Image (cartoon, rainbow, N blue to C red):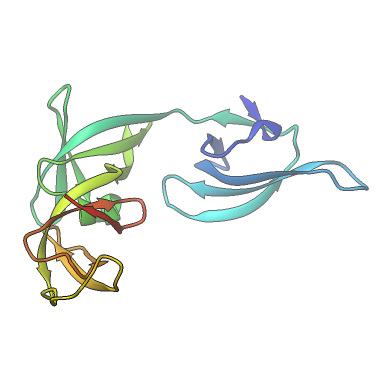
Length: 185
């Protein structure tokens, strides 16, 4: 059991029949009245975010979130199959659960999958990936690295802005947390 006074960013707990992760919190001690905890919490199962306040002495059951690194194998049109690297067990996930992670994952790439009570609820790609540029407008002589940017499509179908000197066929490094270009490889 944890109390509301012990809430910290990233902590997961059970509340109102759901599992929540603390996004932000603030301990408030007004001049008059009792202290309270103001928190922004996100449901790890549905993704809904809400602002709420707690009495610092409220108790919650701590939620145990299991994390596994799994390999993305393939999709069959509706389901995406991932394999546990230790047991070689394959699990199918629907597209809504995989979400934006597919923008940065090719077949055979690794991803982190979070489980709550044995059910998967979130897929996260590696923080940095290296993908090949499949389409972008050609660079013009005189373009420099300090110039502007242009859109480029990578092999997964994701489109992002890259510097003018990046050409088709180049391999670039992308930060998956922000979706931004990092460097040319």
